[in-house]
Length: 370
Ligand code: XIL
Image (cartoon, rainbow, N blue to C red; front, side, top):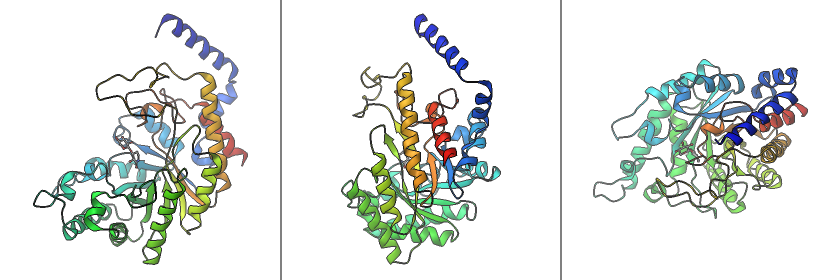
C-alpha cells in the first residue's frame, strides 16, 4: 500500500470509529443471525477444512456464534471422500460432522452426485470407455450407501444430486446421465433414502431464479420423483448472484414456482459477486486491472450498494418465510470465498479481517424489522 493510501485508510477507519457509537458497536458484536431469523429457518455457512479442523480459531468463533447450520465446502464431494474405488477417506469428514453436532447445528451433506469434483475412475469402463449401466449403478449404490450410512442419524439433509440441468432445462449429458440414463437421479434419491430413512433429501442447482426454462427443468425433476413415490424434501437454489441479477422480482417468482411443487425452498450457496464476469485469466497469469478492479478494496459507495442488495434479497426471503427452510452463505468471510480465484472479491457479510460489513448490518436490520 502506498503511504498516501495508508494514511487515507487510517483516516477512514478513524472516521468510521467516530460515527459508530459504543453501544451500537456492542450491539453489532452481540447480534447473531441465528437468533433473529424467522422461526423454522436454518441460517448456515459453508465451512472449509481449516475451520472444521478448528485451526482457523477466529472464523470458528464467528461461525459458532452466528450460525445454526453448516455445509461442507468440499469435504463430502466424491473426490474428497472416495478418491479411489476401494478407498474412502473419513478422518476430516468425521471432524466436520462432529464440529456441527458438538455445537447443536444442523449438519448438511454436499453432495452425492455431480459431474464435477468426481474422480474419473467412477465412470470408467474396463475398455477405457464409459462404464456400462450396471457397473455405474453399482458404484453409485456403493458410494451413497457408504457415505450416507456412515453418518446415519447425524445429518439433517444431503444435496443428493447437484447441477443436473442445462440452462434450457434439459438434463445435462454428464457421464452419470450418459452411463445410466434419465433415471440416475431417481436411483440416487432411492439409494440415499434406503441408507438413512430419516435424512432430508435435496435437489440443488444454480440459475433457477434467472432462467425460467432451467427452473421448469427443476420442477420436472421434482415432479418425477414425486410421481415415483421417492422422497424429496426441498429444492436448493444455490444463490450465486450478482449486484444486478437476479432482480428481487425474479427471486420472488422463482421461490413461488419452486414451492408450488410442494417441496420447500432453500438458498444453499448465497454470495454476491462484485467482479466483472468473463473468462478468468490464464493459469499463472496475473489478472488485468480491468478484471481485478478492487485489488485495493471497494469504495464506500459500493460497500453501501452491496448492503442494499443484501437487504433487498432478504426482504424477498422474508416475504417467503413459510416457504423457505434454510439460507446458507457459501463461505464465512470475503477471505474465504471461492469467488476470489486470484482476484479480490467482496461477496459475503464479513470482511477479510472477519469483521461484520455494512451488508451484515443491513441483513440484521431487515431481519429485526420483520
Ligand atoms: C466450490 C468450492 O467453493 C471451491 O472451493 C471448489 O474449488 C469448487 O467448488 N456450486 C457448488 C459448490 O455446488 O460445490 C461449489 O463449491 C460452488 C458452485
